[in-house]
Amino acid sequence: DGGITQSPKYLFRKEGQNVTLSCEQNLNHDAMYWYRQDPGQGLRLIYYSQIVNDFQKGDIAEGYSVSREKKESFPLTVTSAQKNPTAFYLCASSIAWGTATQTQYFGPGTRLLVL
Amino acid sequence: AQKVTQAQTEISVVEKEDVTLDCVYETRDTTYYLFWYKQPPSGELVFLIRRNSFDEQNEISGRYSWNFQKSTSSFNFTITASQVVDSAVYFCALLDQTGANNLFFGTGTRLTVIP
Image 1 (cartoon, rainbow over the protein chains, first blue to last red):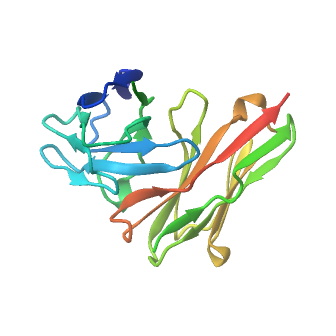
Image 2: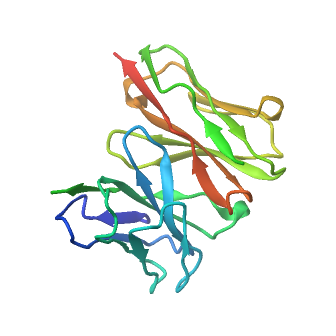
């Protein structure tokens, strides 16, 4: 089955620790995205990647980093510089980036909690 | 500036009632896309519909229908004969060039269908 997988489902971070959230898709999509969702809020864009080996900052990139070495993978690292990382993180992908082809499909999410 | 307003934070209905979720948007672009997503308790966002700014036809899909009116900048979503499985948070989203061709989400409406 084609789709987007995220792991782990729950992740616990200690103070000062970097953690990496995994996102994999087998939809052959060029574009991938990371969003953060806080309780009672909409989704806010952290980073996006239009194509392999390229990525751009979204609205709230500070304290996060990404890589896009393979088409199917777009891992997100939450660094120690992110002072309030507790949130629900959603990964998405679309066929391509741009208005005409950008219906985004989402993974199941990772809930990050700070110990 | 782009903006998506979902004024209804929470709605509760009794099963089999009809319910309409409101979405009002702001954009300076003439070409844009509007989306509705459903987020059930599991957390994954499920794509429901995409509509472009040149297509004002209403759409019906089973118990779901959407009313797009450019004159009032609204894209409302109606569920007919609601069911318990419809309980979820529903997000309206806008994609336009003002937002660098990225999705901008409203804050969502939590729908609870009471059996």
